[in-house]
Image 1 (cartoon, rainbow, N blue to C red):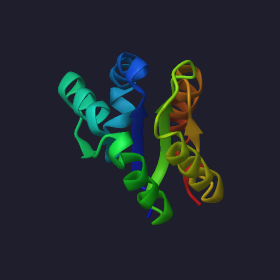
Image 2: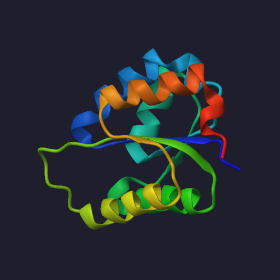
Image 3: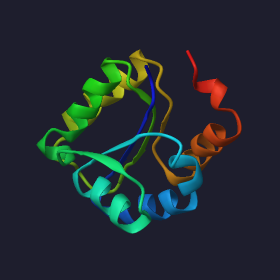
Image 4: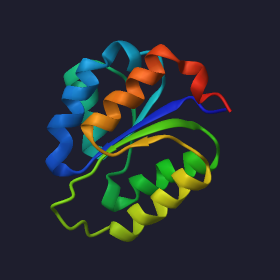
Amino acid sequence: MRTYIALIAHDAKKDAIVKLATQFKNVLSRYPLVGTGETGRRIENETGLTVKQMQPGPMGGDQQIGGMIASDEVLGVVFLRDPLTAQPHEPDVSAFLRLWVFHSVPVATNVTSARILLSALDEKPDLFNL
């Protein structure tokens, strides 16, 4: 059953995802959260939200969350990507992208789309039921 909201951010976007989690704390507190490495730790430490913490992305955290998507556990993903920095694990990110598409999981990859996704979770959570 899809219940988790996944929160992931490249290094240059970690401050932005913490700010976003703070702004949408009321919404995020209604769902179990999962995050990669430092992103999950920072969100938990700076907002008080509980985040199931996976490995850092380059160490397999993306793949761990990908497994959750394939197991139908993830309701939505906020993945703030840094388009200006090459990522050494880009092939993993590409595989992760295929999983979102295949399993019809809504994904936000920048702050504006994340606000839209989180607002929809707040106002119309039934849109996410499959």
